[in-house]
Length: 137
Image (cartoon, rainbow, N blue to C red; front, top):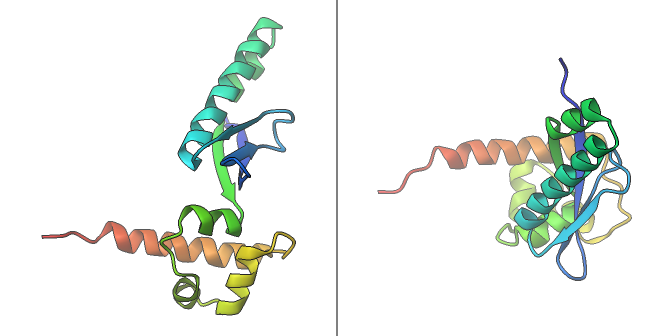
């Protein structure tokens, strides 16, 4: 059986971070860090599943509890949380124009195309794979 997929958007807020999902209308949460807001969203899902069980929607509750969760960050939130990344150097590594990456990471209304998002994601995954192979003596 195919598992339910839930897209969760994580954003920087004035007090920390927030999370919401267009797939699960009305379910939102906040936290001081990305890790905390992810944990809080899992608790919100559990509370929603409890409610669904109470009203007799046991199959829907189980589907929600077994759902695959996919977390999405906008570039501003990514660079705020992972501030150790130098945007210019990362842009070079990803093969993206430096000024474009800086602008996309600062301005809320700059549209990130699917192709550009995929290029950034693939580059970051490649970087993660490289970093996993490093050991220190």
